[in-house]
Length: 359
Image 1: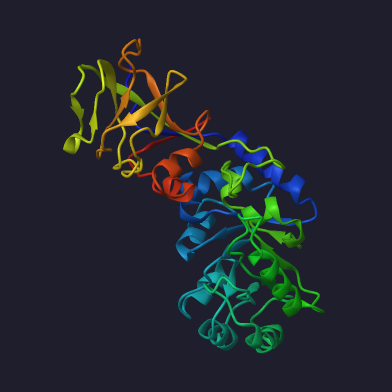
Image 2: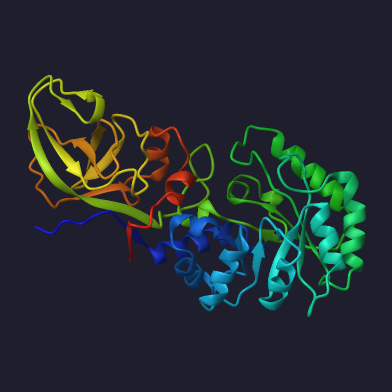
């Protein structure tokens, strides 16, 4: 009997196939592969290395992520998607050939007034309606002029915005954002970037010169309806093992608070995974788990290190059998829905004690 504790298997061939599928949707666009939050839980350096020969650039949220990529030998362009936070960061960006987004007055002033060994590549972020990061329409001429004239900025700058509702094809929000973005950037010869994963699938008019896939790279649907125009494969499969099998009589309860009661005699399986590994604590009774290729329901509350499933009275499963929590054969989107959350959170919450293997 070999017990496997929580293990995330990363399928790098699926990753490359997903990238190829994205390029088929946006063949004229360059790709900025988004590796925020440890590459959505998949391993920052691992994913970067697998994409380093085919992507045009990488996007990260923080400077420490960018420096970790440089330390691992990644030489492709890296963009700080939140920009730099302090003036002293600019020297680090210049030393490590890192690109930055500019989205506020402080960043504009600090980059224009800095003393740098070489100019920086800048992406100017415009707020077109998401109201998170970005400059307003009326601010654009001033920012554009100052950045275009600064000796600290490589020319030409790239113009970008971010879509807040591209996952919903029935919403008019994306059309409004696209119209505003096009009106602001009209007449400019600069490269443009607007499309995230959902827009790559749903809104071809937003592709422009750069697309910025995140979730889609990892084989997870970024849109509300079924993907009909792209074939993607989960890159991560999260698995563990059955570590105990018990027989219950009718009326017996399972777990903290007795949150589940058996309606009849059955066998239950205890799986070595819990919220301490990143499995969602709020997954409800009935959340699917794959055991020996068949779907069985989660029962009782998720514990720190264990979950329980109803194997059925006639099951022949044994201790050591593999349970799949999401990935190949079980979409993480479905598990996220059962936990009233989103796939991003499940993938990014994989804890450090989960073993990572490569397929």
